[in-house]
Length: 192
Image 1 (cartoon, helix red, strand yellow):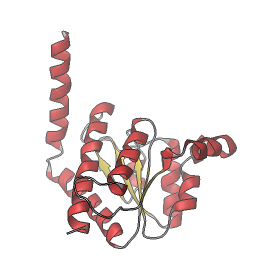
Image 2 (cartoon, rainbow, N blue to C red):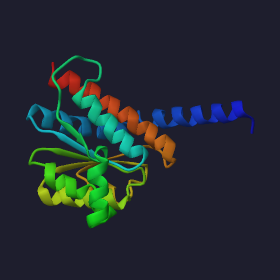
Image 3 (spheres, one colour):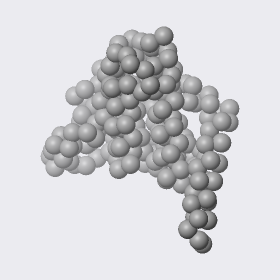
Image 4 (cartoon, rainbow, N blue to C red):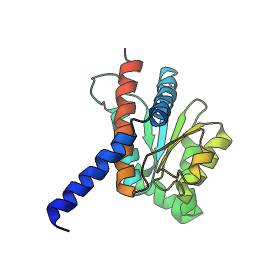
């Protein structure tokens, strides 16, 4: 396949995944996810986010949109991305095991009324799953972000946004759009 054909194919896949995000079930889920986060911020609570690899970057991106700003100059919103402190992550990995890298931090930072956002493209990352389990024990509302299958998280989380693709890169591209949609709605509804 020629390079230009590869490029066109990748762009077409992206457009198709985004087109599927316009389906009613997708819109309803996005609406529900955004409303829960808006509700938490209106109640002066925070979001706590985790993920591995590209999803770790998405967790940091999400937190940055809340703490800094998206499109509007406004008051900072509390948001913690659990992958950001490498000293803490590696200490937990070393002392307790990789599967506890996020659940241990959640135990330290989460409070009633907070929202925990678990990002796992497959929906099956063991350290993310353990964090969802910990959040549930703490009574924290859980939102998952996964691929079309949803993996184990689909049935574990209170809400799970399943991107309309099984391809990792397309799923992650949908997740970034979801983060930007949430950021826009938070700014519009919390700071109206």
